Length: 69
Image (cartoon, rainbow, N blue to C red; front, top):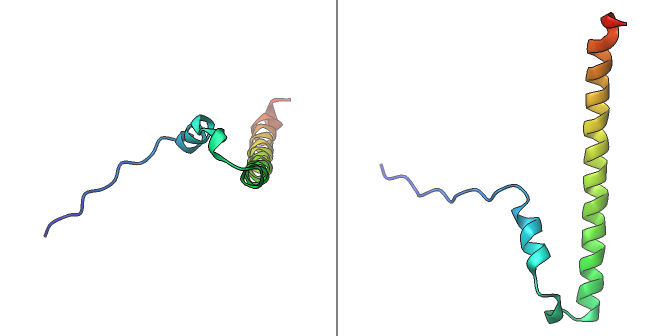
């Protein structure tokens, strides 16, 4: 049985690097406004995930610090 070749995974953050390197001169006003809306939505999504991670870390810290005080 032959196996299909597996595509290498992109590094974390690779999409962000690609977006930052894009030539914005190629975009029109409406496309730039749309791009900003999508980027702002991604910022909100990322901030929500960060808050979730911080809450989890705080809960773990509180649990393991409980007996030490």
